[in-house]
Length: 434
Image 1: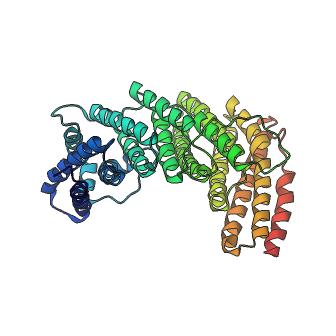
Image 2: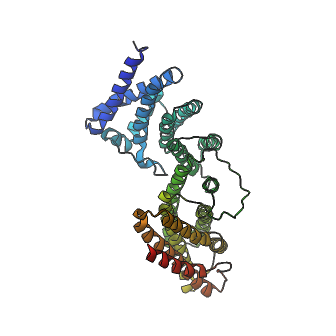
Image 3: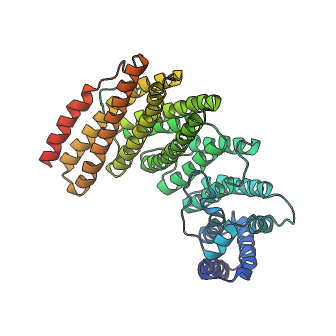
């Protein structure tokens, strides 16, 4: 009777409903039942991958996605699995023992470590992803499969061989697969960025993505010529906005981590841990250098209005971080122990020549678009964000001038502060007109 598609559809729907009911179920004993339901859904999904109706397989994988993503929940480094946790799954979230039980049941195994079982599960879903990508109309399944892999990645050791292999595999998918589904693009890029972080591959990937976004969106300066090539097929006219959203969310996490590292830098400096301070300074400057180049690409792009304000907020945060690092060096000179990291000097010049001028051009472009479209519903947001960004830039530049005087090093070479004053006049006139 399981050959009957209607009955199979009913059984899978009932199983899916049972898992959904766990959200309000406080009976811890039911967790065993739910784990076995998940195992059954996985078996049905595997069996029906090639012969079953898409609606049936979709229900199976949706249920598995709900169960496994919520089991891992916020433990993921990127912070992008934000669905509400059910009571049953929130109990598993804090218990490696119950999580281990779930993976063992899914693998039909009585042994195996948490990491090894997670690796085997990811390998299984990799095969599913390849098959789903080879067929039309199964993008919803791809979203769930990518979400499962993203969640399970947090159970793997960072920078292990399998993580590096997974990184290469996901990157190849993003390079080769041209999707027309923005949600699927977002799920796959989220997986890519998560694995990139765990593989400790640095921020070069984010820069490459920002270049592709710039190419797809077009440049503000229409006279500018570029010889850059489009390398990520996943980013196209239909998906580029989703790609930008994922990139901005990931950059927000990167900036938060950098702020934490700079707090650690202050503690080491207060404790006179010179060696640790020097290493952290180099690391922070290198990371900020990448972030600056990424935002230099985005600041030249014709950003969509719905994401422009988020971009400006992150730029404000970036300049606050740059100001914080500059203040660290100012204090060193104030206490007569002044010195500058060589990479910091390069960072300052990079910011002044490659980023700041583009920011003012971007703000002018956004305000021009706002006036042309005459859509006043975003007027208040623009007034709040734009002055905050300009203020952050000016505070950073004041600290740079102060540091240049104390260190007797020309840190403002190639930087044009007059742009800020000119823009402030322009901003005031635009605000008055609005």
